Image (cartoon, rainbow, N blue to C red; front, side):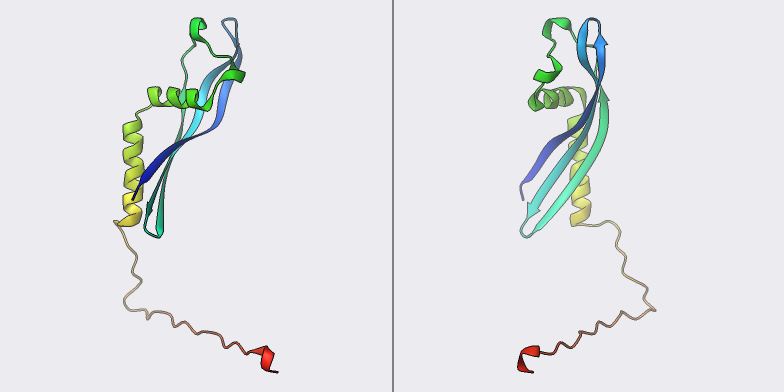
Length: 125
């Protein structure tokens, strides 16, 4: 029953230049996923959004081509309420495991009868 969480960064909108710096990240488009395996069943949760970035400090600016996935994930961790995101993911998975609403079908309509097709063995012909 281990649950794992992961970031997926799909795009980073960037200003070509800003205050003498090139390729300045302005918006990060992200997803946060959760996966829980429980026996032979796997449950998934997913939230997504976009986070605006403040203007960078020229003293510790990372060139766009040198930005790492770990660095962007650290920006997301610092800029978003990860605890709330993970709670939403946990709720999605819990609702899959224990649905709050279930559709049982109409009680006055009989359940459909499944008829198995007859398959002849052509090897005996």
